[in-house]
Image 1 (cartoon, rainbow, N blue to C red):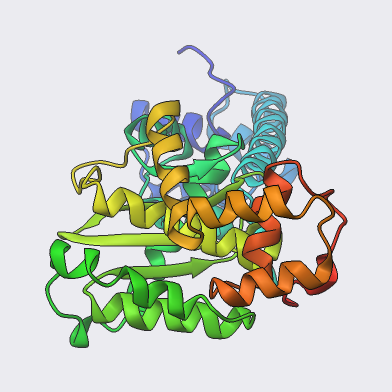
Image 2: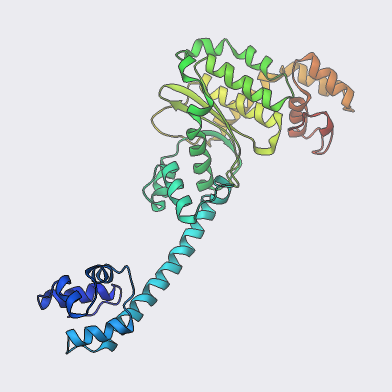
Amino acid sequence: MGLNYTVSPGTILKEYMDSRNISQKDLARLTKSSERHISNLINAKIKLTEEFALKLEDVFEDVKAEFWMDLETAYRLYMLRNTNNDIVKLKTIAEEFKFKHVFKGLKLTLEEQATRMLKLLGLDSFDEAGKKLNELSYSFMEDGGDEKAKLVWLKLCESEIEIQNDFDQMPPFDLEVFKNSLSVYKELMYTQNYELAIENLRRYSNDLGVIFVHHESVPNAKIRGATRLIDGRPAIFCSDRFKSLDTLYFAFVHEISHIINNDITDNNYHIVLEDDEENLANEFARKFFIDDQEYKKFIDTHKDITAENIVVFSKKNMIIPDVFIGFLKRDGLLKYEQYNHLKGKI
């Protein structure tokens, strides 16, 4: 009989019992123990003690107590090593999939967090994450970031779809109606109240049959916005990355362009990284807020950009200063720290 130190002494004991036709009831009688004790020992629910090893020596006269204790010691060392390895692995997984952020405030063990994360991701094991990432096909603005963090953020958004949207009141989506409603979206973004802006965008999007989810960012995901079709409806996800209105508005309009261009699907997620397509969407976002000629005229006229002429131009074009300042900074016409006092408070 070959010895296997990766199984419990109870497993070896059961082999000896079977080979000598000794039942659990028989062994309990012979060792003056309960049947439950024998069952727990066989199923590795309890340790094999020195006292019981001596009792087994009396039953199996050709097998010394030291044999059973060597099995017990080797098995416990094996379990300890592997348990430590599992803990290290789980801690690594927790860091990769941002357990601390996702489950903040919840008194859950690491194992409970892992179970919940697998459910959120729709996976049976974390080893399947690579396959799920390969299936990603999201159209989104991004500036790098960790792939697993992106997956977590996207799945968190999906989990909020029914919570944040009123499906009972949503009409069927009509692309032509949507295209003709863009001016209303611009009006709704003429506010520096961050919470009001989110609520307005969600309410009006739902009125047009569009899903909208706003979710806090996940560390290292670096996603600003994403869009796809879900059950035939466009779904726009936006994060609070940078916690600024111009970032929110620009990301939202960027995703609108993907809907209008009809380049989203409901078959798979689709990551769009091609420069041409992304530049097209970014160009759309700029023109959505400011007429090209008006913008050029302002730059040509105002060599010295002041807070006053920023406010005047913004009011004239029905946009908040945050958006205009954002464009000026992206074009290198303002420094990062300039005129932030004109922007809405988050």
